[in-house]
Amino acid sequence: MKARDIVRARGHPLVRGTHPTTFEVTKDKTLTETGDCIIGVAADRGAADLDSGFKALLRDDRAVLTTRLTAGGETVEVTSRGSAAFTLDHPADLVWRRSDFVSDRTVGIRSDRVAATLPREFIEALRREEELVVELEVEIP
Image (cartoon, rainbow, N blue to C red; front, side, top):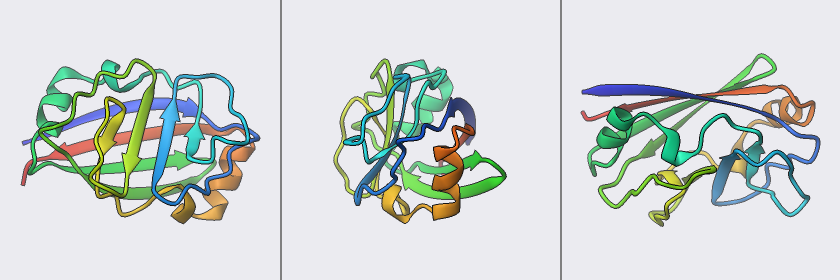
C-alpha cells in the first residue's frame, strides 16, 4: 500500500539548516535566526492538511516515509518511519525527527537526514528563497 502527498513552500534568507536532530517546514511566512531547523516557510499545508488516506498509512508503525525535497535544481531524499502515535493535526508545521519523539507536528521519526546533514548547496538554494517542493510517499512494506 502506498500514498503520496505534496507540500509547496519557499526558502528564506535566514534559513540556516544547522539543527542536529530535526528539520521543519511551516506555513509561517517569516523566520528568525533562532529557527535553525526550519528549511521552508509559507507552506501551503501543515500536518493537519495532509491527505486523509496518506495520514492513515503514515499512522502505522510499519510505515516507511520517503521525502524528496527539491529547491533550485537540488534534490535531497530523506527516509523516515511512521508511527501509530502520530496525530498529524498541527495546523501549520511539519517536522521530521532523528529520534522517536512524537508531537502533533511530527510527520517522520528515525529520519536519516536532519537540517544539519542537508547538503549545503541545497541550503544555499533555500537562502535564495527558491521554491521548495516536498514530495511525500508513504509505503507499508
